Picture 1: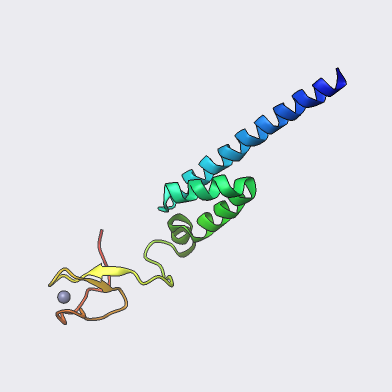
Picture 2: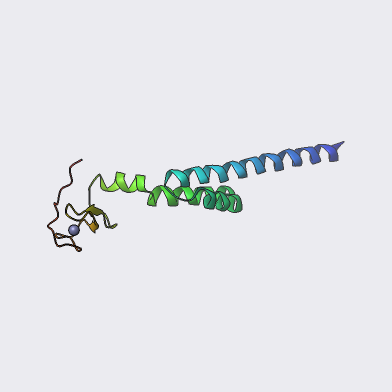
Length: 114
Ligand SMILES: [Zn+2]
């Protein structure tokens, strides 16, 4: 009787653990997708690493993600990632820090109106 009860609770515990494990994996993948990362890659990582992986992925994606970068630096603010602007003359992508287009030499407007 006692042995059967232990067996049953073990099965229940493993079932819950597996559900939590895969729940974390899918949540990790969802966070990754929201941050513009690969859903399937992070689903795989989530399945392999489980809850610790979720915590790691959540921190990594939230801290490095596009959303938090915008919150930290503000729209159009300074960041270490070179932002690209369109040349008004030849329509090529040119880093925002450039004063003139590197393709046609046309002056770039410093401020972009939306
Ligand atoms: Zn140009």
